[in-house]
Length: 555
Image (cartoon, rainbow, N blue to C red):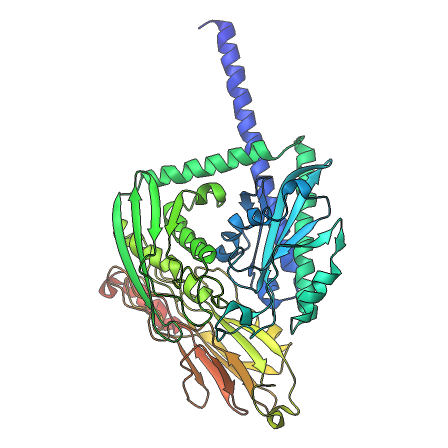
């Protein structure tokens, strides 16, 4: 090779390296943009489940509506449902019709995040008059009318007000007529308005930061970067699939359900570089609001697959596209309209464990045990309208939410995490926040010793929560999301099951189902969250770890 040829090759390699570095820097900046978008929502939201527990998501999309990047702050149920939510707006509002300052909204469960309580907000972004991207965000609002945060409705019409794909802001001006309809159908209009405006503001924050980034890097279009990110992510996920054994594996899980127990059946097929999860044979849809729409079912299923198969690959539409899902319409994991879906996470957040059950057979010794599954949303209300007026004459009206967390399943080389919302990842709401909003007080909130399943590695612990009313009046609790009261989280590789959950009055009476229950005046609500399953033979647990648990009072 001549000297000039060598110099040319060297210059080409250097240029290629610089381009790769530039691309990586732009990718890092894009992640920072969506994280700032999420933090904006987290810091301005009115609802405690958003600002304290982080029940939200935020992301940026290319002009085709494909999710490029998502914030680290958020839940799989929000992030992965939103991976396809943006393109649904295009059926009514083609991108060519959109203008700067426009913002679009919906809470359609089947085209959004799975229930009416989550508003999806989408904002087009323009640079010098040209559409360059979309930002979308979502969060859980406190009330959308209907029967409230319960599972007792028999249709989605009873669950609250559905807002189809509509424009909430046009040319920078809020659509106050649409806002009035939303607020007129909420018991907490101030909080709901605040959350909607927080979603709008969060998207605006992301848009400003993206435009600033593109101007800094001299980009006229985001598409070349988007194509690179999505193709690289898909390629990384497909390479991870190539390392897996080929075959088929089945798993079955029984969960408490509402009017009856439910069976979740899944079959995992890995063949020719393709991964398919098939839920055929799962139970028919429930009469009550615990059904998981297909969009939510897909979100937690692909989370479970990706968490084991390709956790190192960025989470976007590129990496998620390598997974296929088969469902039967009319089942509890693919209900058809107008099936009730308010407490859809009761089923949906069990699906990661279903997927893990299949993967554990394909990859023995590498997959964690079952977890407590769905978080227990403690929807607490004054008893107005639920008991005689005489009993609530001097009582303070209130409606608040607290979060109960169970244990995560033990991992192949570590104990399960205690009081961990796995797989949703949301946090708890500080008791001081809840107590400041209502006359209730938390007499006890602590780890539940011995609730984690025994094993070489112990399952994560659940918690005990004891709540009383400072006023001499009854209060109500919606147990819509209480599960694993009858069916514990199972262990793996010889590990024991975690302890089942319990819900009762302080006086001793059990609260067995997912209905709305009255806590009489002078009594208390006590819930004990389920623990995660153990991993491995308990006889092989390190004696030093046993001693540590005993000293800490965990067993």
